[in-house]
Image 1 (cartoon, rainbow, N blue to C red):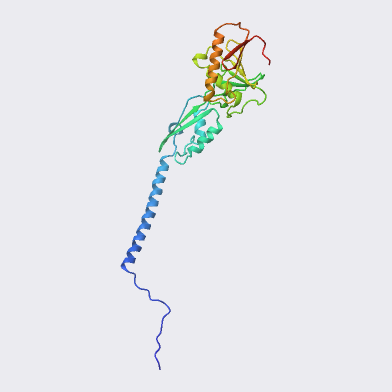
Image 2 (spheres, rainbow, N blue to C red):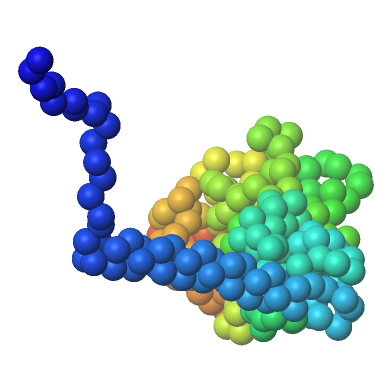
Length: 282
């Protein structure tokens, strides 16, 4: 009877070499170190976030402003930092800042200075009105004003002495937060320039923007003037000198006292000023 060799289907595993054992050990140590570092980072992060918690909003969230229209508490609420438990670290200041600028048109800019972990200063620059805006013929104030940037906004504090820009029913009053264009912006630039020392004697009281080719202007002595300059339809730094030159010519003509007071000044042609004694066409 012949002897048969029996073979097993399972392979016999060989012992791991010292090199392989070392590699596995190093991998285990790396994994353990990574897990430990992650755990340590989480613990440190939690400790840091806990230090950024607001306990006293009045003390930890300082609000400074150039004006008085926006209250400090309104700013804290807008950034959701008006309550105990709010967190400076988790607050998205960029998003909140944009929301505040979109909502409150009296705010020109917001600057945020963080002094983490526990304090932040929010500095609010409010818009300063330089002219009122009213609808021609309206008996009631619109309480709409404009600042030097040409942005219209609602403002109800001490504006009675500001010059008035009167606009016709079409296009009508600009919306709050809207930037002025065309003749409205030209009128604003004229008012702004007339506030400079060399032109203060003109004392512009009111400008009507309903005419396409000139601005009907009421001066401080209640004389009327038609004023226009090259580039008036699109006011810019480049065309400002044209406007200033026209104002100088008008001022010099008035100071020359060559006519009576019952005149309408025509300052619509470059380098020329006319005195018209006819009544203006409304």
